[in-house]
Image (cartoon, rainbow, N blue to C red; front, side, top):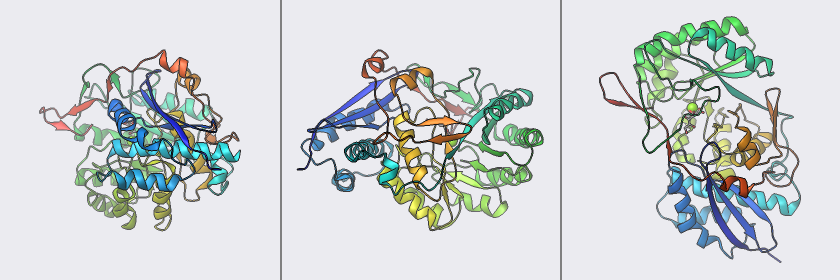
Length: 404
Ligand code: GCO
Ligand code: MG
């Protein structure tokens, strides 16, 4: 007899930071969890799920994962965008979780089984100046990590993306309005080669270094930067131009062989198609949560595989441990995987979402619990109610708005 969905609840809480969680329960008592967090727009996606999706799920068959995806995507008429796709993504994750629990198998087994013994992750090293950054890199090395993202302060700028006064970097700041940062491309571009040179000298040739330019440069600036850091052999240079202007990357591509990664703000395969088919990138960074869940992400990776592009999904603290689990299960079972971002979580977040996945020695393991292997401590989550929090905004020194 087929099972049916009896409830779809949305829980929003702020253990350290805001998370939106979907919990689907079936008549047989199986519970599936999905992450629907969109940083700074949490309540919109919560309403989308509560008001427009949850009522449609009741009484449907939870094993019809692909059909449910198509129904929610095509049935809404209004398509794509982070809110819609995160909401669909949460449903998709929860349904894979339920299927795994029903089968008594971890999701990676349902996706075809392991293709690798461990999933390498990259973590974030940062420092206000080069000595502080080198110290941070050394700490990551001591933890056995071999893929390290490096971000540093820039002389002349008082706040910089990826660098924090707090040992745990968290870009979203609590409060009713986003904070403001100033940025000047020239200062940043002149500084970065010095920073990467110092790090490369310290770690030697075998450590994979990554850097995130966070969508701020013009095509010519980006091309110049990619060229100027070529000798430091980056594993990837991320988001070097604003992601919407995809043709911009052709200039960067033609100017250097620095590997390029982009896509954390993309939501569908159609956002990725041009860059992948034209081989303008090396790594596609869509997050499982923001790109429609496991079902749709697999299609993106399959398209990428055919064009020599690898997956390197977004995994900051705003991707909850549930969506990170989905990413790890996919990584374990997807051949064209590059590396998983893992920024880590506060102790409280680990307690709110107890999980079977684990991180050690620079690698992640999905664990063998059925489904995605993540639980929800609802009581603890609800002790930390939602608080408005926003990503910063940026302006140039002349006061004009710039991509943050
Ligand atoms: C990354 C990202 C993040 C984003 C953040 C936005 O590469 O991890 O760029 O730091 O800024 O996830 O919500
Ligand atoms: Mg990024």
